[in-house]
Image (cartoon, rainbow over all chains, first blue to last red):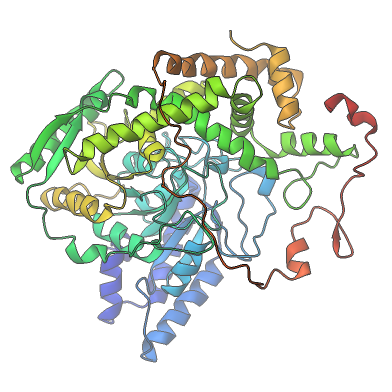
Length: 486
Length: 103
């Protein structure tokens, strides 16, 4: 097995045994990037020299016997919506094409402290708005399992980079499914932590009450490893929870006794692909064979989740993206016009179509005469969605269902119909509205060889239980070691 | 259709966007379709339900009001579209002129 097909924890072990250096590992991933990027196009920016210099510094520390961080010598790819000091951070938008942040996001600081190798910045739907990564202003990322198909989105570059073995780990962000859905479509693990588990400082805001940063990995152990590094309180994000971070990996391989799995009947309705459904039913049988109890539950408000989300998220986006006015940073029109026209032209030139659509929708939902009917109504339904989950977690430990209604769809298939694209997030969106935790793990393949993912959702700050439940399934199956042929 | 081209143009002005007529002709039916879809929320009774704006039960979070180092001027201005000395350079604010239609 080549270095790049290995998991992060295997690469850590190889370094500890002296069988590979951080530089060997980094060079191997850089070589894979060179080889597969022409087909995959996961990265917007790779700084090979900086990555090699970081690796050499880790190797020097190891030789000198100095203490090393939890991710020493492990390359991590970063969604290009997380600020990296002195490195471009574009949000895949013309608006920020030349933006170079003067500071690091909190998670970047933590990765550097953990001696990780920051190998590059990955493609996304512009400002994380989309489900296929086709809304990037710069390039189209392809699914490593079938390059005529989308990798999912909005963190499609980060998911494709791990699936294609261009990095063993990556960071994404999840506002309505943007980690879990691409993880599912690319056949890897993707975790959206509880709202507040990870600091959002330096995450360029889309919808502040929904956004959360989380890991992509080949397996649950690696996801736990990366979560341990990035989780925790940060005074610079007052919504980051001041709660201790458990050592998630310590308990990971201890199966949960008397695990009760909730199955929501609303997750098996119209629109669910037959092959995805049968993979999920099979996963339930695996859990039963491991001694879990399956309990049918109901999340009665979930059919309203997409409507709720596209009011709440767009309202917050219209407010957050008001800052891009061409004055302090970002694109400014070259036309010599007055102040207001400079705002309007800079924004219309800098933002792509989907971003403009969402700003328009959110502006409408907050405008005088419509706010009560749209935004306020959506906040009330959001409460009902959260109440559904509170009631569910009184009856079960985790909720299991499909992550996405279908396997990866074809490039261009849904770009002309925004509403059809929105519906691909139907199973992931409630999790963000309720602020709970969710993980997608591989649970099968279609006859044509496309990955299928299942989602487990857990109560707020119950990541330890969620990861253990996910690991129980992973130990009993062999979907996670598969890699695409590229 | 729940939204007219004139409605969409007004929203665009509020949002400080300047879509072309062709773009408005595309956006309007798309936004209408999304608004028709979200109208399903009206079916759900929510009388007496408390709004949920945020998933955490946080109220105000305070910190000590102490001086912290801030960015050096050159770093703060490094991303400015235009700069004059130690200042951002912007179009004249008080010369409204052609902007009155947006007021």
